[in-house]
Amino acid sequence: MSAEAVPMSRTKVTIHPLWVRITHWINALAMVLMIGSGWQIYDASPLPLFQFEFPTSITLGGDLPTGLAWHFAAMWLLAANGIVYVGLGLASGRFRAKLFPIRGREILADVAAALRGRLAHDDLAVYNAVQKLLYLGVILAGVVIVLSGLSIWKPIQLQWLTALFGGYDAARYVHFFAMSAIVLFLAVHVVVALLVPKSLRAMIIGR
Ligand code: HEM
View 1 (cartoon, rainbow, N blue to C red):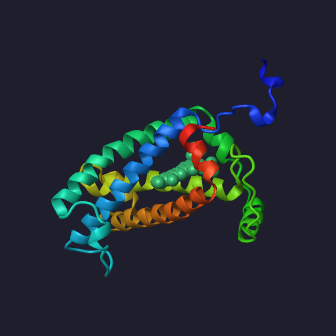
View 2: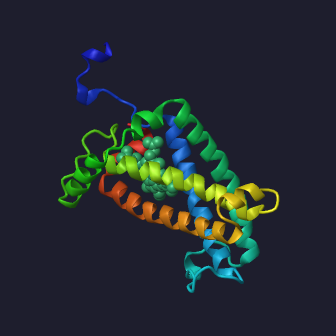
């Protein structure tokens, strides 16, 4: 039977290709490891950025050496996977097709619809304006967190990068705020995924 002869409700349209699903879930794992171990490193810092600590129960690694070991191990996973996702996202045209254009008017309309509980999720293949903005934002935050992390890991070898962030101390704040943005995104993102289970299903099996 040709694809045209199959009723729309029965066609099996791939919403997220395999490479998106694999890189998405590897990224989720790597992010959780990076965030948990990052909080451990933050708590152990002799020069804390802020006057609060993360509860030990939500940090990864019981002490500084173990936290650092986790952070540096998961870093390779996050960076390598991120390069594959961003590389394929750009090369395949997926980013252009799915995340652009983002129009201010549409964002306002979608936020208003979401607040009234009326934001449609009928077509999972098309992101609404708020999704586009948030996905693009978190991808950029991912790039910033990796680059600022590199600049505070190797401030001598990568002086130019550290300077780009305004110096070592500023790069630490940038790294922290990028983490905060990603954690905020993640909190909203997971709640929405659970509220719209078919979107979660599509990110697991593709359809
Ligand atoms: C347990 C954690 C996570 C769950 C349950 C989850 C779930 C999902 C689901 C269901 C979608 C598809 C959304 C849709 O079709 O409307 C999605 C897409 C996406 N998620 Fe997540 N996610 C998680 C973690 C993360 C993390 C940590 C990040 C980044 C920091 C992230 C970034 C993205 C991006 C950028 C997309 C769009 C992908 C694309 O279309 O190329 N997710 N996620």
